[in-house]
Image (tube, rainbow, N blue to C red; front, side, top):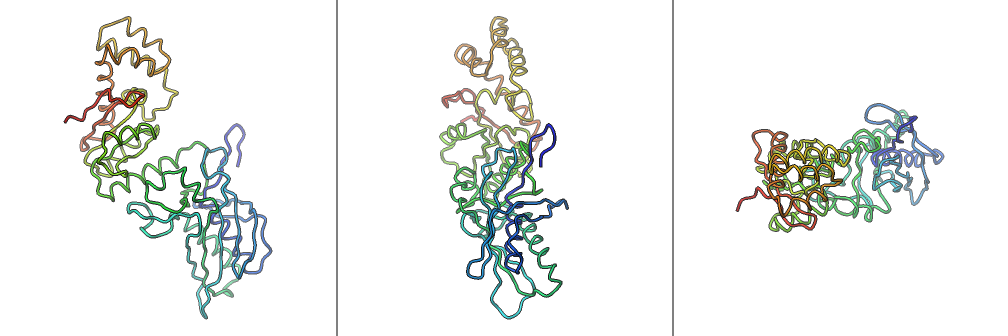
Length: 366
């Protein structure tokens, strides 16, 4: 799926699972192993999906599709997503489809996700897509096929892939999740990251956590976990660049307190109220930071040096020892921006780290 001048789209693990299941049932019911199958996406569009291989083993049909995430940097790009399908061995059936997880597909162990505890980590929309893909095959029999069927989704390398995701934090063990809301992966659309944030917040809320601690990545999370060493791991959520989205989502979940634990560079962008703290805002950030420094210190030389700086790390070297008021000003503005996003009913706090994990600013009064 490539459009002129644009990055190439791909398809989700849910679409891959549905395609594998459809191909496997076609083989099981007497058709030739297909080279590709057509899958109906949640929006009604049709998508042709290549099938890598199929085989019949002991009355079970297996087919595998290679996940293609297009130009999106997806950890499951190139993963094999398979389905085994077999008839349930009893005298009568009515075409019932049961879905279960095989190797490499995780199981949910914590409440708060879209799937109940103890169930395979196959989200509702992919489940529906698998059901519909199988039903499309059964409808071609026009009522002649009345057996019930089991569909087992498996991912040969799922356990290893899961180590590169946030699944364990979310309580998904034993493999990856089968995901997708549209069936299509839009390159760099960031939908998957936002969905992970939402899931992590839901798990934390279901665990009874009242104070959620938002970090921007693994390093800031490690430093935050030292400060809040008594908090359970579910209390820490990595939000990446999604400042506004994460604050608003946390407020909707009703946490008693929302805490930001970030490095100075991210804090500068948050202080300016950017919904996303992407590095592309760097030039604007330096100019605004220079204005703030002059407002706080009345030192034109310092303001000029900040304006000519290339990075927040460079600025921090200028102000951390001799002008701590500048860092405090950034921290207070960061909290003000967060409160603007959260609304009046949420308590918001925060800390700013230097790049070695030392606390430069904290609103967390002891």
